[in-house]
Image (tube, rainbow, N blue to C red):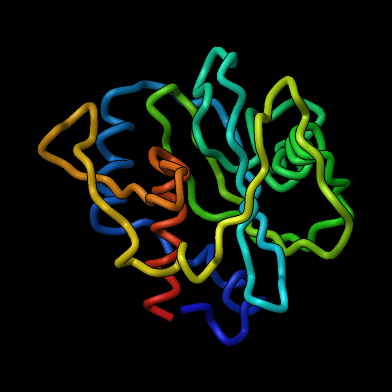
Length: 198
């Protein structure tokens, strides 16, 4: 269920740390790696008369890492970002989906999620304020919209074993012909849990 005041929900989302299976996932990944590089992703929500939607991408199959996977626009923090996760997320969105920074109203970054490939990823919630988007063919094969109501429904998720520790399970979200898993699904499930708590 979408919160009545979506703006207030997004503004407070950073106060909800990952818990349960997601906290265990973060702990497991951190235990298997030493240091992490800073990164950020844009959790972009597009308001719509029929209901808000989340903007997601399918990465090109030729990419060296995570080719063909469903992802938020985002990537590694660059020196030009001056240590700002919001700046990283907005810059990466501009590069990957062609949206200028002013087309998003951003909110405080969420606590980090750790990737097995060595990144500490901060999700940056944002509301789309206008304009269009286009896929950068070098990085993005497709841009699609996921209904926010689907993403916020905990019953829509399935659980899979964590590759590093098969005894632990992590969320995945099937949607149409898309298989949303890994860090993207973990972030979405965390937001769904926060919405339920709110």
